[in-house]
Image 1 (tube, rainbow, N blue to C red):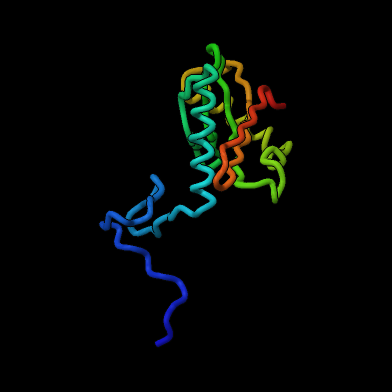
Image 2: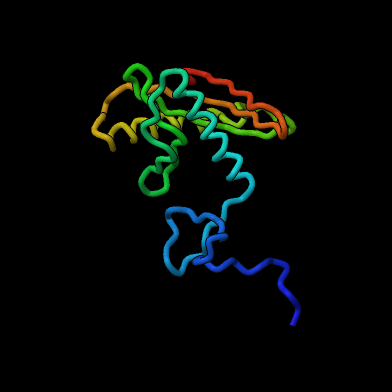
Length: 152
């Protein structure tokens, strides 16, 4: 019998198993983290640390809107104002600057999701701001962070 080119998924009870998504359901295929996902998660951590050092309080991470209508990377409070933060991470500029991945449709969705987050947390009608953080994580070099406030 020919051997499959893909390895079998590891035993879920093994400590060396890849991390599963929190939405894993019994019987469903496990969601394995890919290198791109790990880079994004690292970038979000770097961005959260940066924002904390600049006076933000991180109040939510990876918030998912009901019915799969989108996700917010970070939600912070900056001097009492709700801030929705989109984090874009790259390991190089080979495929463009991280901010280039945030177009008009994405911005519109972020503003809508910000209003939904506020409503879901008892803050309906409260004004919020959308910020973008670009994180460049080159191999062997220091992180480069850019923060744009009030993106429209």
